[in-house]
Length: 301
Image (cartoon, rainbow, N blue to C red; front, top):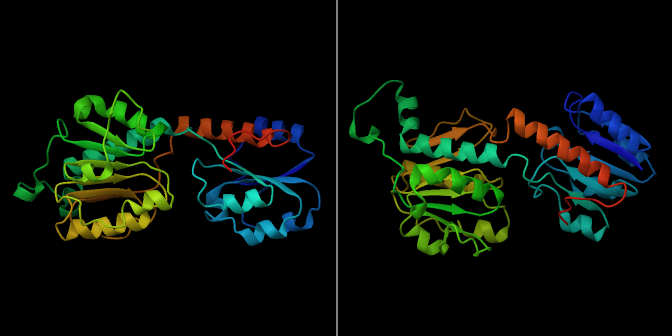
């Protein structure tokens, strides 16, 4: 089986590349979304994708034009940017890289929440210390704090919040209601009391539907979004902050040139971007790619 890796040449170590070459008949690294080599290769093949190289999309038309495609190995944990159902119908395995940045993302969640609590966006816009009433921050301790999505990141975040908020205030909403360490609360009930809300849930039609109607959010609530696919929700919430209908929102966006009014904290999409996380990511990615030769691991479809 042949392998096509869409990533930067510098991403993989020499040892990792050599390991892949030992397992596949041929290995080609391509640093731009040029799919002609796929179309012209009639042999069985696997494709490994860095989303930044391919623009966070891999269209079905590319899949259709690629003969004998057996697996698509994503470099990310999220897999919403590839049509997994379509791949399943065509017998193509899709894999991801799970849990590589759990700690890093949880740490950034805490940082973003503290920025909202201390009104850092207001000070950044003002450019100096300001003693006006609207600049007064607050302690997070003892404030009702809720986590939407209680997978690996949600759990790691909850443990980090124990000493900042206090465990009795930490609640979660998730399909899994059986975590005895923390309190499960229905989403609508959360809206009645939440002061800090973290969105770590995976994007799907059901999770997005939770935020169709934002009118029930309280003006005191501060929302921290690190989940991919909630960009529209973040922008709507930023507008609510400007209108005084929400206490603050923090989210990631690689375009930092946009200006927002009020307690809106925007950072680059770098929650995963630590030395430790990247090392884990590439190690898991390489092992997952190798597994497609026989039985794919970390399969998501």
